[in-house]
Image 1 (cartoon, one colour):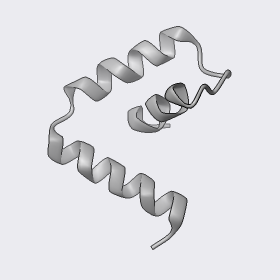
Image 2 (cartoon, helix red, strand yellow; image 1 turned 90 degrees about the horizontal axis):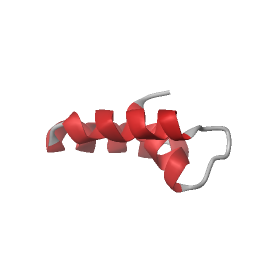
Image 3 (cartoon, helix red, strand yellow; image 1 turned 90 degrees about the vertical axis):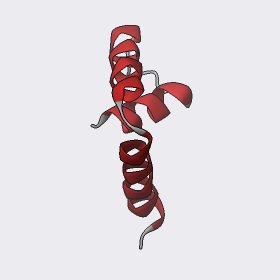
Length: 51
């Protein structure tokens, strides 16, 4: 699971993720550029809603 998906699961309250994984996901997400974040969000959107 990529960092953004982990972060979204944490924000939605997925109980299977522990605090350590949440911190790692947040740290990873903070290092991304805006362009990379947009690409990841587009990919996630397409996975959820289709093309």
